[in-house]
Image (tube, rainbow, N blue to C red; front, side, top):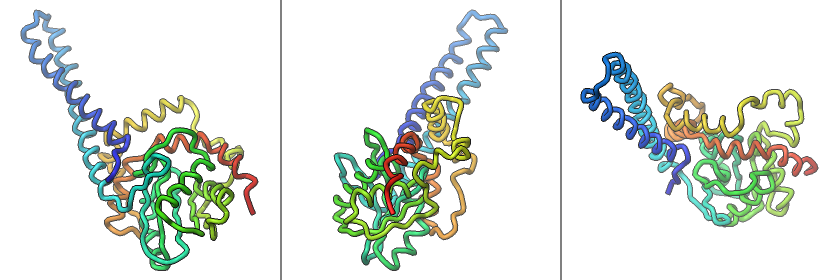
Length: 287
C-alpha cells in the first residue's frame, strides 16, 4: 500500500482551504447588494473579491487534481513495504542470482530513478532498489539522517527482507558516502561497492562547492515555499513533470514523471544538513 506523501497531504489542504475561501468570497459578493456602501467601495470590493475567488478556485482545482494524480501514481509503484525499527521502508527487487545488487539513489531521487538501469542489470543477478527514509514510499524517521544512521536503516531493511549477504552496494552521488559507511559498519555483509559519480567525504569543504550552496533566506522558508509551489501543482501545469529519460520503459517513465512532481524536500534538507557529519563519519573509511 502506497503511503501518502507530504506533497499530497499539503495539496489536499490547499484544495480544502481554497474551496472555503472561494465559498466565503462568493457569499460576500452576494451580500454586497444588501450593503449601504458607496458605488466606489462597492466596485472596489467586488473586484477584489472576484480576483480572490478566481485565485482560490485555481489553487483548489490545481492542488486537488495534482494530489489525485500523485496518489494514484504512488499506488502503482512496484515493490514491497517492510517494517524497519518501527517505520515502513520500501524496496523493489527483480531478477534472480547472487550476489544481490542494492541500488541507492542520489540526493533528490528515490528507487524510481533506477527505472532504466535496474531491468538491464536484473538480466544477470537479483537487483533491489530501495527508498531511504523519507524518500519515495519510505516513511520519514526522527533523528539525524547522517551516513551512520542511514547505513543502519539499510541494514535493518535487508534483514527485514531476508536478503542474505554478502551483497554489492551501488551508490549514486551522495549515496556513495552512505555505502562507505555501510561497508565499514557491516563488512561481512558486503562483497563489493560500485560508485556512480559518487560524492566524497568532506567535499563540502571545497570552496568552489561551498560557493554554490544556497544562501539568503532561512532554510525553513525555502523549504515551505518549495513545498507550497509543488503542492499547488505549478511544475505539472508548466509541463515540468514530463521529461524524456533514455532507456526507461513507458511504465517507468510515467512513474518517474510523477516522482519528479512529488519531491521529498524535507528528506533532502535533512540529508544536506547532515552532509558534513556524514563526511566526518566516513572520511577515514577505506581503502
